[in-house]
Length: 236
Image 1 (tube, rainbow, N blue to C red):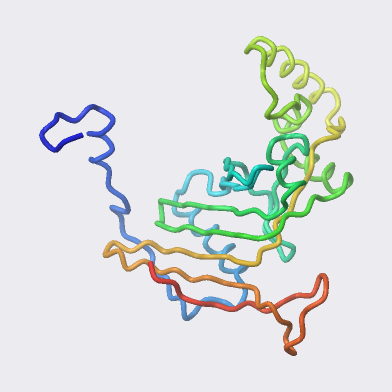
Image 2: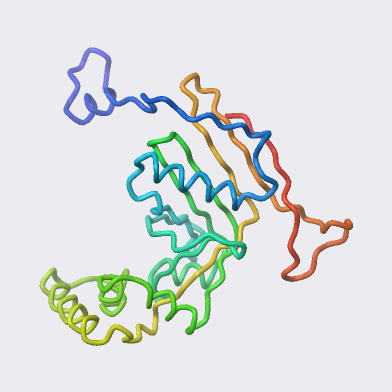
């Protein structure tokens, strides 16, 4: 579109938008903790208290069998010493992709405070007991969705979904412990976590935590060894 052409509604709206037209929080990277988990929890609570809608929504990026990236939005279930937790059907597109290529990335964006968090690492699927326990604490709607199943499959019609969903909702009400065999809890164990604080002058603060390749004594850590974190600032 040339500069003298009239803007359509989409382009006019797009060009009118502004970002971070608010008072932005300060982030002192030098005072950040040695481990990314406490900082993530602090930022998460801060975003929620600042009015950020659904701060527990996140983007999950995976790779398919042809090496093509894929991304979708889902809910964070927990963040603890084991990693960042979420759940889905093992038979869904993401479930199949993670089974074949378990390296993945998560992205959080909280525009209310101009903050982002990016997490990269390897995803592990939990066993049936943990997956059942994860679903047990969810809402009736979550159980109904899990019982409906067939996520990512081709749907014949909206009526087909309505019938399957109605049956699943009825069963979820009658059987709150009903099993959903394909429902799977996952945890992403991070090897990189980046915190981004936006700045009105575009002097954004980016702090990245990386897992060291070697253990505390300089030897390669064995399986399950807790490696220290290296912190580094990045150019915005």
